[in-house]
Image 1 (cartoon, rainbow, N blue to C red):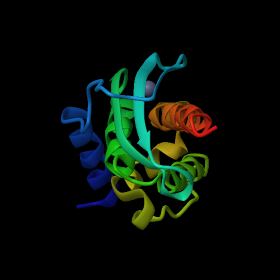
Image 2: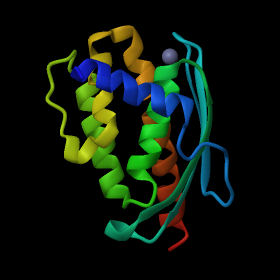
Image 3: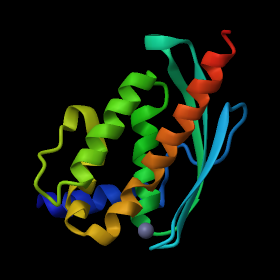
Length: 155
Ligand code: ZN
């Protein structure tokens, strides 16, 4: 199977059977992000625990609507960040951002990105990049807010 076809298969699979979907309790923060150019929306919650380097994303839950790319990307993201440390999750977020802004020039690190490498081809289509990034930007926002609130509880 050609790589492009395999990647399309991965995206379609996550779109049809999204992982981790649905809003769950408990959670620390909830954010709502919109991609107006395509009409994609996501509501995302995170639950974190621990402090500093040991801060872990216990759960990430979401409801989304929109195109297949935005929805599949959120599902892939769930697999990559749920249960991981905040540091590792943000590293994956940065790597994904880098690939999506590369216009097809980056060589994605599969170690870090897993199924998210399937979105590499999307980076050639600037109009769709925001679709693929929607869930990840929501995640970064929610984690930053949750971490700030969490650190405050220490004082
Ligand atoms: Zn979209």
